[in-house]
Amino acid sequence: MKPLGWIASLNIGNKKIDAQHRYLFELYNRVLRVEGGHPDRRRLLTELLNYVDVHFAEEEDLMQAIDYPDLELHKERHRELTERVLRLRDAADSEVLDLLQEWLFVHIMTEDHRIKTFMESKRSSRFDLSPQ
Ligand SMILES: [Fe+2]
Ligand SMILES: [Fe+2]
Image 1 (cartoon, rainbow, N blue to C red):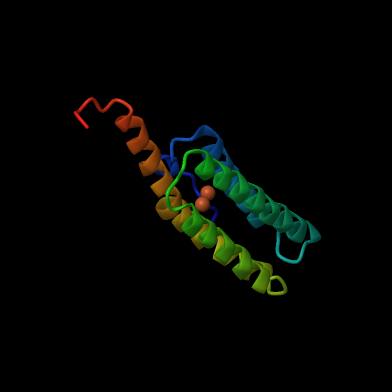
Image 2: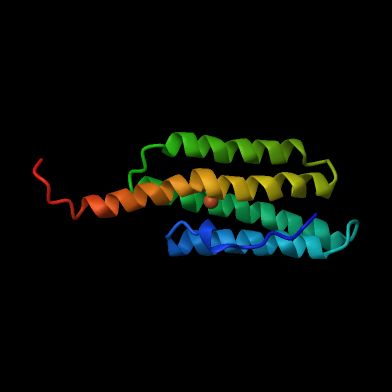
């Protein structure tokens, strides 16, 4: 498994959410640095999964606050990952890490980026002077 590298295009333009996404990557990479079978690995993985929960809740609060239209769908995506992780609870750490590796990147690049697009359209409509 390769470490997750942060790239600028992952940013969605909200400082708090971007910082949380970067921290998720960092936690993920911390787990990878510990050898399989070492008790620290399980502990760090639990820390990562707990932070995923915290992040989901805060991202959902943000969507609520800005009247994001696809809030329910996005929440459903978050629930799906949580359920998939729970199903893998007793599997090897590497299976959970594989799932997170792909999921984190793809989810941020697609679903979370829709929040970015929405925030940008809200911002630009504030300056829309065209007749109604
Ligand atoms: Fe997110
Ligand atoms: Fe999300």
